[in-house]
Length: 174
Image 1: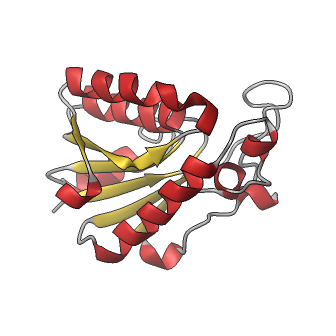
Image 2: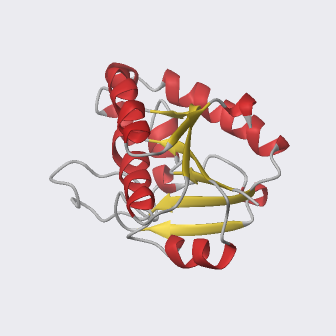
């Protein structure tokens, strides 16, 4: 059995009216990727785990308020019914700042596939922690995204994952 980990498909990242877009980042790539994630969820047999952010006001500095509970941007943009398990995290790294490690220890997946946002923060930190802990990680490259203005960060991230023993795949390959 494999697991699909979907990180932070929240309105603050995916909506053109979300906090991330209001900081000047284009979100067309993120919105397109969200559609791809939704399609993949409808056909995968993986155990599906959603990890969403519960951040605090000014947690990452003044004016960097994203995914604050009780705000419209905190809402998950996918149906929770599509997931076998839903976890909250309080910082970028879902492995260190949620119950993900406990869950994976119980499930013992053969592969942990990762999708979601933002690739250079939460996706990256989670993947690096999983690899460091010895979990077999696969980044679904067509199911991760970041702001349109910083897409140049994607290829170096994918190369980093591969250099550390992780896999990079397209969702149609699995």
